[in-house]
Image (cartoon, rainbow, N blue to C red):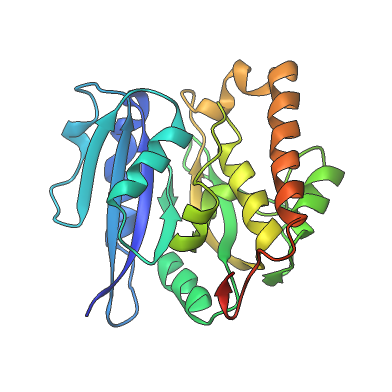
Length: 254
């Protein structure tokens, strides 16, 4: 019986042209014996602009829905996800070779709820730039991400765009937070509030920088909205951490 890792991608019309690059990076993945991937693409909106870029592959599932930003699109896509692990991949980003295999190896070992990896920013000229403050490779203890995030102006030591997590844990936390942005950071902190994570020092994602990028828009750094987002992200993480009977460990979520 084939085991599945589901890759979930939210896409809006301006970013649809990058889907073929994301698909190419999926095709280049070499998975462990007995594994395959499923790609769930969910359009944030109902246009005619995205479907032409969706590859014809039985492993690819595409659907549309009312516009509500990336959090809602990804969470709606979970209705079609049947993998035991869920990997997030933004439409304009690309996985590096070996990423899915590394994620599977850690999660299959038990005791870890989620995995992240090193990120390389992919600049318009094709060059890449890495983050100079990556943590050591290995486990990330519960609560460590919140502590670092608070001490570094709401910047985590690991990138939420690289998350791969256990499907049941993702569902138990309600998917991505219902926020206009930082929804993936909110999920990262929630995951770390109830489980240990892991960081791969090998680059796992090419994070494309381009003019239409949502995180590059002025609204993303609007002071009032940003403070509100960060407040609710922190409050959720602290509320989860205060529930000591709900933890993920070697015996699973309980």
